[in-house]
Image (cartoon, rainbow, N blue to C red):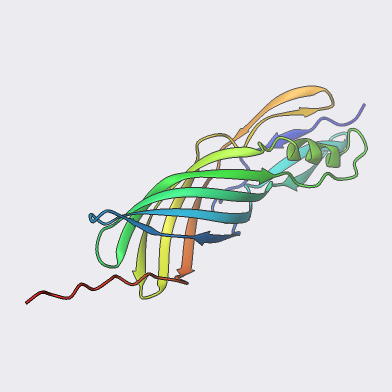
Length: 195
């Protein structure tokens, strides 16, 4: 009989120290004359999730433990709606559809810590819905914004290890800082004033 494993999910005291990156290509279309715009985006995100401890006893009365965290790799399609609050500032909000990639399985004998890792890898939901909201500022062709992202559907739900099912629901909440450069901007047509 192998060791009993316990997943400690409250050991990461700083939940905002996991830094990754997001690469995106976006377009912005003006909607009407009230300052509204649509901003569709395609993106790829690569970041690390919260760290957990897998606790177990390899030798009786001598506890051992390994650190585990999900590596979040996903492709995204966002449809954001924004409004200019001044000539240089704006707000935006909208849904994001994410296609999550599972991490590669490890070569793992049954009952090993690596087998626990593989079980946790398989809990990732392939499709996830999130929402983003933020504020931004533009300066000439440069665009900067801060966003908060919150999942609407779980990143993980349930897992199975050695035939036993366990609950393992996780949500995603993260802050995003975006710096962009405008590649193309359509010039407004000037209408000559009539005498």
